[in-house]
Image 1: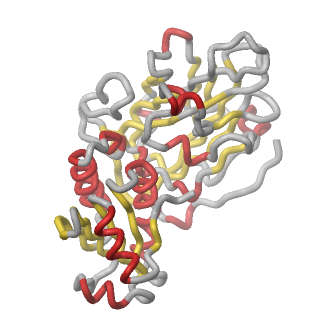
Image 2: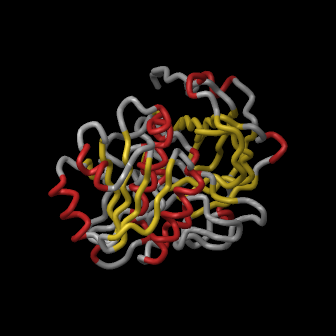
Length: 325
């Protein structure tokens, strides 16, 4: 469920400015193409950085809320205005993804939102709960995932949806205290066997250097307990997701076997890719071939892509096709 507040009145907006220390506002319109293009990034920032009474992400439809738009002199779309304690501190005009990320990350860090580093952080930065630094010269490019086009096959619906994989917040599997006692199911698990097929389209072409997978199955001797992935296959630039039979027949761009020693103390495996094979990538299919044991389920908590961004892709090139497992 989206954490973004869709403003319906001047009074509601005024109240938000009083009750939340930082308010990020997207002034948009339904007919605005650039607004639609940057909307997935805005939703991802909202999902990762929203914090009650601290950071609130809002959307104002300028056709429906003309008084608010006039009050803040909005004449171009999209316009992003960031308020701190009710006062304007930053304004981003146009669908400038990098500037929007930089501005929001800076303010989130000031508010204690350390997870902001998960969105295109500078080389050497890292999400607060992950170990180590990013490879020199590369950044987190997970924000380039087109979340609306994500598709995950063979996922158990009793657990989190596919978008949770790119949530920058600390996984509940690493939480302690009361949070750990009643955790939200902020991970995905396979359903009928230990295979998963994830389709990830990107908003721009990427050079993908490293893949990080976090998997935090509970320590248990129970045969029903989920497994960590063992073998994963990666396929680049597919126009849509593969079927399971198709994935087993097509040679992957790269196949990786994850060993026990690859998992660090946060349950994260950092997997360098054959960089020359992952240039100009517009989509990526991740096939979890099997788990690291005899069980029938596999668990994924988080994914992170590290590399470089390139040219924005043509949104019309990808399509979503249904598959049966």
